[in-house]
Length: 96
Length: 142
Image (tube, rainbow over all chains, first blue to last red; front, side):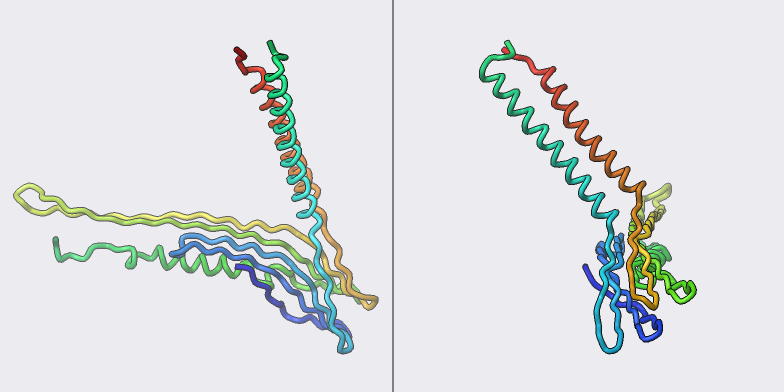
């Protein structure tokens, strides 16, 4: 289950920072196992009555997923193109 | 059946221990674990932020049996056991720098993880290419 939680506010001068994290929890029935994945989400900043937030980016995760998706797409494309090419050769009798 | 009590799963400390470990694992995803203790550096404040992945699994079982022994006396036996394992992985994601000038989030790029992902992707492409070449070579035409 996905849930966000706020940390303890940190005061710095007129500014108050509140870290916010996101957690994904999966619990197997009967306490047989569990998976917990937590990551920083954003930092909420309160200053002179104004409230704004700064997102915490994760470039490593983005690049990782991009590379894996590109590899998967390229591999699938190779399989598709080469199987189509060999089928064409097969039908035209090019391999005899 | 005999009236003697048999060891059951409820009477062993393993489920309680497993539940306790599970609770501590669930709390590993707490916001206080994701954000580290703020570090003061002059007028600035540094807050480290990390990603946490915790996985754990347990298994247990018990059983008993009864059979008639020599002289018609019943022979009983019971046993039980359990096991488990788990792992927590952490990765630094960013450092939040709060200074009088403003709040800035400095992301941390993990080059090793990116290189491993690139190698995995290249390996998949290479395996697709080689697999297709092998399939083409072994094909028997009429």
